[in-house]
Amino acid sequence: MRGARVHGIRDVRIEDLPEPVLKPGEVLLQVPLVTLCASDMHVYLRGEIGGVSWDQPFVPGHECAGVVLDPNGTDLEKGTHVAIDPAIPCGKCAMCVEGMLHLCRHLEFMAMPPRHGAIREQVALPRRCLFPVPDDVEWGEIALLEPLSVAVHAVELVRMKPGATVAVLGCGGIGLCILLVAHAKGAGTIMATDLVPERLAVAKKLGADATFPAAGESPVPRILDQTGGCGADVVFEAAGAQETHQQAVEACRPGGSVVLVGIPPADRMDIRFSDARRKELLLINVRRQNENYPEAISLVISGQVNVKPILTHRFPLQQISRAYELMDTRADGAIRVAVEP
Image (cartoon, rainbow, N blue to C red; front, side, top):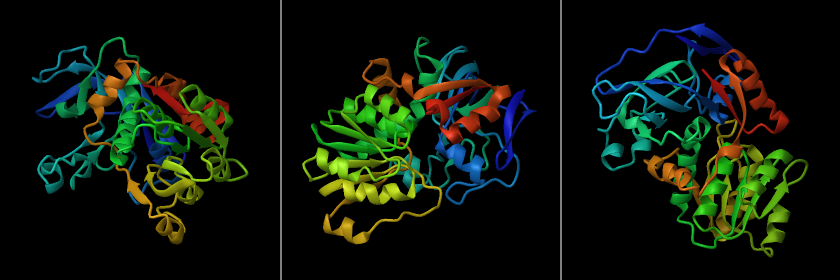
């Protein structure tokens, strides 16, 4: 079985890998497509994410589509197309019992120790991680259900009111998914910022009412001008940059909510506490998603959201290094780049 393994910083290699061995309750899947995300890039460029790292070569990738090869006694049928939740909770700890599976104290996650990721021809996963989707949903759409589920969870956490004014800082895959979900949930004016002009063009296509470049100057004055000096009701920080945390606080209205979704390069957040305190802002941290796949799937199948423009490039497994480098440089309007094992 062919697949990719990361051996060190900027060192990804195509290798022969052992075939998965099925455990009870696991399903064997063929992997037609995997999209690279910001967390993959953290590990590729820096060797760690949030203080977690590997001490051996590992298979990357967790945003993926699957086709059932061996149902292994489960209710799925061979050939079923599935979306894949890469998180595997224990189901027994206090967090799981309370229904907060994403905060499981013994959570395993694809492409994080000790579980290898999806950029390989086949993978085995527990049945609970798999969500059947219609055959006419494209592989790229299926893979992007993972970030879309995160976006559904982020919008759910803030309890956004209909007609709310929203700002999305960062128009990568997660930011654009948040924009789509906020629009579907009845947001009023939606503003978006990014360093890359091509990403702002996609944000506009997906429903942003106003887009502001963030290169060279802060977009905050333009957000305040757009809102009559008050600020947005909700600001989603999805850039994962040090400066955007403070920008989110400045761009939010008094009594508003700042939703922190992006993962910064350094494991810290820099804001002026007085700004957040005087506005009495609600700061919300987002930890992936919590059983939001069914709603994400429904949004795609019903046509309420269109994630297709987010997937901008595809590469065969043999060109995986090019895929990583394109994600790093963000050249040619790259947003989500896919690898086809």
